[in-house]
Image (cartoon, rainbow, N blue to C red):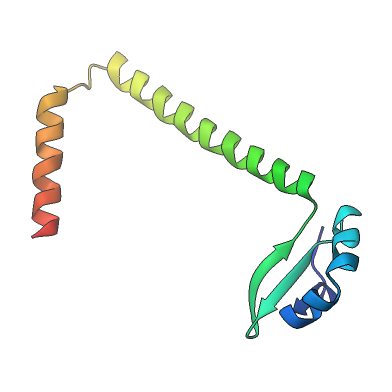
Length: 99
C-alpha cells in the first residue's frame, strides 16, 4: 500500500482524531504522524506490524543460513583456521581501533 499526502498528519491532528485513525488502521489505512514537521511515527494495523516483525525475523534467519552455508563451503575447501588464533588476531585489531 502506498502512502498519500493525505496519510501524513501532524501529531496535534492525530491526537484529536486518534479513535478515527485507529479505526482506519484496522481497515488497512496507514498513517504517518509528524512531529515538528518530521515523520515521527506510523499508525498501522497490529496484525500487519506482527507480519512485518515475522518477515524481518525470517530475513535474519535467511542471512544466518547463508553465512552458515558459506562457512561449510570454506570447510569443504580446507579454508579453516584455529579458532583461538583467529580470536586473538581479532582482539588485536580491535585494540588498535580503540587506541
